[in-house]
Amino acid sequence: MDLSRLLRFNYQHNWSRGFTRLFLTCLIFLLTACRSAALATNSKPTPIDRPGSTPPAEQPTPTAVSTATGTPSPFPTIPPTPTEKVADVTETAVSTPHPKATTPPTATPHADINGVYPADFIVLPPAAITRMQTVYARGQENWRVATRFSKLGDSITATPSFLTPFDQPSAYLLGDYDYLQPTIDHFAGSWQRYGVAIRAGLHAWSVFDPLWADKEWCEPNEDMLTCEIRLNNPAIMLVQLGSNDASPNFDIPLRDIVHTCMDAGVIPVLITKADRHEGDDNRNNEAVRLVAAEEDVPLLEFDLIADALPGRGLGEDDVHLTVPPNYDYTSPEVMTSGQAAQNLAILFMLDALREQVIAVGADS
Image 1 (spheres, rainbow, N blue to C red):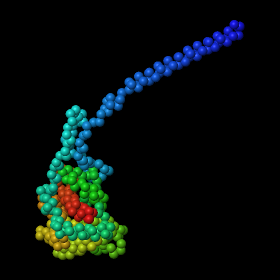
Image 2 (image 1 turned 60 degrees about the vertical axis):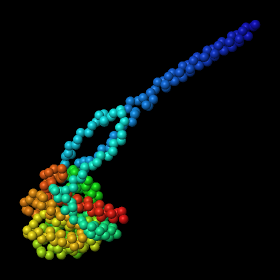
Image 3 (image 1 turned 180 degrees about the horizontal axis):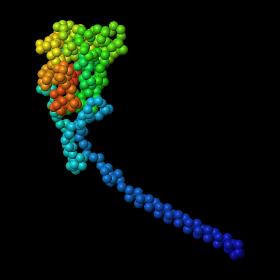
Image 4 (image 1 turned 45 degrees about the horizontal axis):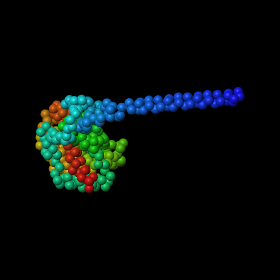
C-alpha cells in the first residue's frame, strides 16, 4: 500500500469515528432534556390542588338597606343606625351541605303616623280613584309627566323644609317607612322644586289674579296655576291653602282650582291645615272637605294628624309648622314635629296615587 492510500484511509476512518461520537453525544443530550421537561411538567400542581380554588359556599343575598349617601346638603346628615352584627364568612363556612334558605317573612310595615292610620288621613274612596284615573288618562293624552308633581300654596308650602329633604338622600332616614322609598324615587326632582305657584301670603282668590304670577316666567295675563302647569307639566298638584283666607266663600275659588287642574289632566290633592287661623269653627278645613267630597278628588287630612302632635305641630306663631333637627323617622323626637309628620303624610298620599292611579294607567 502506498503512502497516499494509507493517509486517505486514516482520514476517512477518523472522520467516521468523530461523526459517530458527535451523533451519540447529541442524542444523549436530547434524551436528557426531554426527560427533564417531562419531570417538570408532571411536577406542576393541577388547578384543583391550588388553595382557594374551590368555589365558596353561596351566601344569602343581604337585604337592601337605605344608606345615607349623596351630595352634602344644608340638612343635617343622618347617621346610620346600629345594626345587628353579621357573622364573618369564616364563621358561617361549614363542611356539611345545608338546604337552600328560604326568604324570611318581612316585618309588618309601619303604617301609622303617631297612631293615625292612612285609612283615616288619606281620603281616597273608590269614586275618587275612578275619577282620578280618568283625569290621569286625560293628562297622558296631553303629555303630562307621570313622575312630576307641583305645589300650590302659601308660606307654609314655601318653607325650605316642605318636602325638600326627600330629594336629598343624606337628609332623611325612613326607618320602618322604607317601603315608601320607591315613591320618593318615582317623583325624584319634584320634592325640592318650588315652581311659580307658591307665594307667601297667598289666598285662594289670588291664585287666578295675574298680578300674583311670576313676571319672569309667566306670560302676560297668565295666572300662577296655569303658568305652573305649563312650565312643569305635572301629573299631580298639591294644594295647601286656607291659612290666609278669611272669606266665608273660601270654597268657591278652591273649587275653581280643582276644576282648572282636572281640565288640564292634573290630579289635585287637597290638604287640610293644622292652624285655626280663621277661628275655632275650623270652617276652612270644612270647606276643603266639602269640595273634596263633592268633586271626588283626593283629600289629605293633615288636620287629624295635627291632633296627635304636641301643640298641633305648630310653632310660636300658631300657623307655621315646627321643624325637626333632622328627618330621621326612627327618632321619637322627629315624629313630634309638624313638618316631619306632614312630609311623611304627603309621601303616604303620593304612594297611594302612584299605586292606585298612575300604575293602573300605565298598565291599561
